[in-house]
Length: 214
Ligand SMILES: [Fe+2]
Image 1 (cartoon, helix red, strand yellow):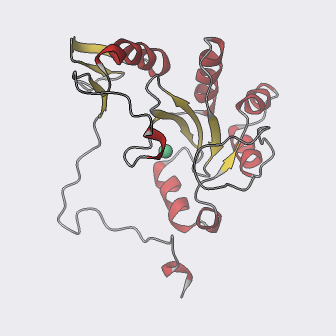
Image 2 (cartoon, rainbow, N blue to C red):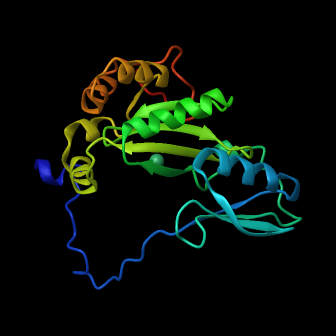
């Protein structure tokens, strides 16, 4: 097996060479119980600045940019919380991206000071990511691209031996990243240190997946 056919080494397909027209991912649509609707509206407003574009008793449509909506929430009477959500198949999380580490960290600090704590944070190699749970237990990732370039980021995922060996990443303690930024370290240095496990949290979070070596 040569390196470029090894597992995880996926060559890039020329867009449009296969005749598939590629639409852009536009929104997510969550289900909640009727009495959970307001809490989700409030939470996504606080966390990612989503505003209500339209709502009625059985749902709401929110947007935090120019799209007509980015987050839809349906609250039909028969919907109820799944007590085994964590181990059931389905969506694991949604993700929102900032264009700088400073903005990711500023949002972490703002939310922390409002009493909204993440349940873990991880340097995935291509992104630094902080994960939260909404009031229904849906995970939401806030991230920044470590390459500041989607092309470079995707190329790293396709070709990096580090990613092939560890596709999940390395936990970090957001407070240590806050401190590193305030000490004047660059985002590149902070990513390097986080990815080298220099900012490990204590204890290592249990994220309900396979055991991850620290
Ligand atoms: Fe993700």
